[in-house]
Image (tube, rainbow, N blue to C red; front, side, top):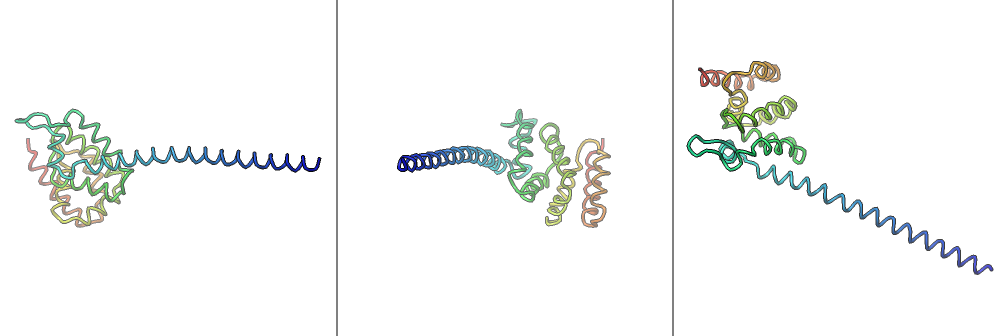
Length: 193
């Protein structure tokens, strides 16, 4: 009888151990199956971010409209792709993301459609992340800062609200104020109707 109790106890112990191992494996399988999906999404966003144009010229070539050549290859999906760019910001560091925005903007000039849509998203992101933006802009050479502000302000009719908000944010930085003022005067001169 005593041997039967020992055997029963041993069987119960083995059963519990096996059950715990199986549960542990299921838990690991669930974690393993979730992990790659998250990684794949991040990789997809990083890849999209890396493949998105790094200059205004490249941006125009893919998303713009030319009066002679017509629509670019991604003209009709430009807004969706620009939204994807701004969604990909969580897959890269703030500084990397802002640098790309500065690189696209520094040679930019307002145009309808995709350029306008990019500019609107840029402004929103700038106002929501002005500290990072101003820090990154401060590391750029003067011509890039000037080009950024020109694109930021450029449009057929000056947006007074954008101007007022931006001036307030840069008011304590004499270099930014000077560059901004020069860009503002240039935009006004270029857009006389």
